[in-house]
Image (cartoon, rainbow, N blue to C red):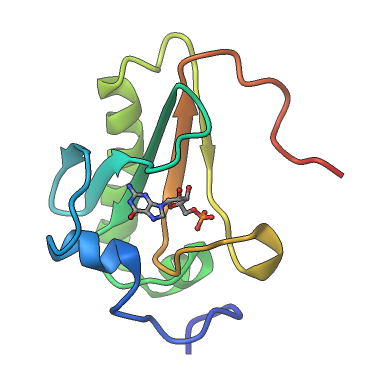
Length: 126
Ligand code: 5GP
């Protein structure tokens, strides 16, 4: 059982379907560990999702279950994507939602990259 409240990995989730090519995406980067594509409902001028190619429901699940090579390859891909999008100099934000309180919608581990304007101080509202 994955290490959070999300249950077993569901091969029908939308990112699994994107990985299988069943749903189109606006791809910006791909390597053996990761696929990056534009979010369908962007919340910043640039809003890209980076997902591992392996089946993990969340950050906790990925961190526990993935190999060292998968973890290193995935996080290197995140920074490579940001660099490719020319976000390194102006800066960007990386965010992952993990489990129910975060509002995680898609149960395939993913990282959001936000950029393209000053993003303000964090995203959390109380
Ligand atoms: P979460 O809330 O799980 O961290 O974020 C899921 C993200 O996936 C949301 O920002 C949502 O807009 C995006 N998303 C959901 N379905 C699709 C889709 O079919 N294609 C793309 N490109 N993004 C999607």
